Amino acid sequence: MKLSIKQTVLGLAASVIRNSSRERPADAVLRSELKNQPGVSRSESAEITGLVFAFYRWFGWLDIGQAIEHQIERASELGRRWERNPETFPESELIERAVPGWTREQVQMTAEWARSLQSDPVLWLRARPGEGMRLASKLRDCRPFGLGPLSDILKYNGRQDLFRTEEFHQGAFEVQDISSQAVGLVCAPKPGQTWWDACAGEGGKMLHLSALMGNKGLIWATDRATWRLQKLKRRAARARTFNYRSREWHGGPTLPTRTRFDGVLVDAPCSGIGTWQRNPHARWTTTPADVQELGEMQKRLLHHAATALKPGGKLVYSVCSLARSETVEVVEAFQAQHPEFEPFGIANPLVARAESSSQLWLWPQEFGGNGMFIAAWLRKR
Image (cartoon, rainbow, N blue to C red; front, side, top):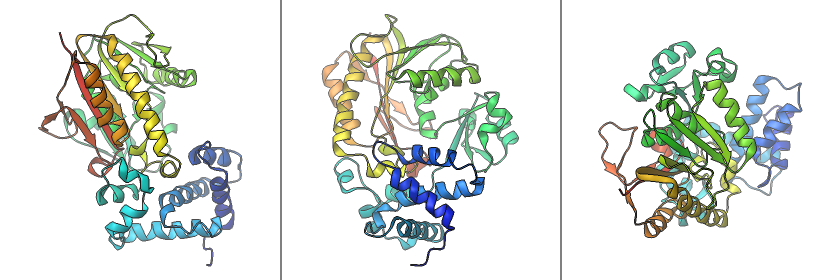
């Protein structure tokens, strides 16, 4: 096979792939490799990134007996063919090759989901409440998702480095997936309330809760990793978010505070199956054992965090996973263990006049975001 990709670009892409593993995700290796190659232009960096992601997106179609460079070339060809005419890929082929076989035991496998996995992900922004239209006109290449509160969800189609923009440094927006924004809208915290983001990570959802509260009231943000809380602190300063306290919490029965909350969000660590469109490398490193282990962790987190709610308080559980072990099985276990909670009806905040249900599934093919599962309860008075 004749290689048509520039050799330096191809070589760097191959180096990233060779050095990537379960312990060293491809996106982290990619950042490290590009950082150590000062002579690589911005356009070459973009091309290398595209080749690496295409390799994992089309990995199920590749002949692993061939040299990495030829596999990259083949993946690039498949990607171009997909862009030209995705209908040339039969549904049965997509279902069979887009994900590892064990996935079918955990996820409702459909051709629509498989097709979404093979498409490039959408970049979503979250503007400050009521500022979406104005921000879109400043950044350009932005389109509000809807009207009213949904106008603050922006689909970005441009090419500029948003992290270098004046609007970003002024805290006018956050890069946040539409499904993650839906979690905050389901929580619907009110100004003056007290909330706990139990698995806050680097703070994306906590910042959204604070914005919805008008920076009034109080949010406790906890995580098991100190370095994530340090990033949260920097993000909060840029966003001018001040109504929060952060502390380590490892998910055990000893809670970070004696405070009783109006609302608790458990956005639990998960397998990330819902992010496989954005992170195709994870499709081939995640295992069934990971999913089972994470499901047990999620049950423990939910069980312990629930004790911090006031009577009448709202408990929201979310994961960017679509696996049964991390979604419905966690919900069933919690409800069996906690009769003092009753399911709370959720209306899909991304759909006008949506019907309420005790569980909400957001699929990538529906809105162009990550796959997300959300459930909610009220503590009985």
